[in-house]
Image (cartoon, rainbow, N blue to C red; front, side, top):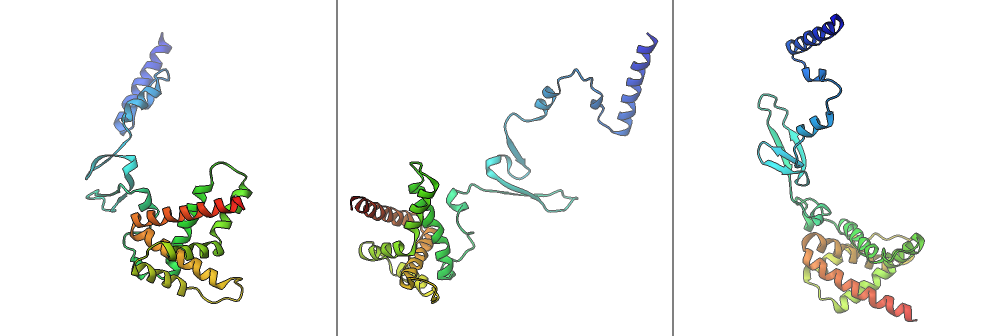
Length: 226
């Protein structure tokens, strides 16, 4: 009995000591208490982020939260957005597309065209080597040169779009290492146009990709017959 009393007295004294020091006295909770139930009570049922300015916000809408560093005000700047996937995969809104060089426009257009080709051929599943050979065959300069010739004949372009293509063509530097310099110029012109339209007019870009899809499908069918 005396031993039990000593343990009880030690627990009471220790708890009071922690309270005086400002410690968390709940650390002395017996081990038989369900810690999971305690943690569940401390976590809100809905996964939301609460901003002082914006109120509760879902995590999907919060990009990041940065403090200004003013401890007195403890002010907080929250950056939140509802960007679409295309906006995440596009340059910043501060980008002036009309001031971009033909090389820069083609740099973006090259990625757009390759993603377009890869997405079309990734299914049904095939060996990686076969998939890569198919993609390389469609994104090579000679094939893009063919697409550009078809584009000029059957896809009406605005004056601005023709200027962008010329900007891309003129950005190509002469090199003796290229086997087909003319095809490379055509390829860069097509990619510059695609990059420009992708960044300026998503609906127009959709029209162009739909047209490219029809041309590529027709050529693949003709190649399969021969």
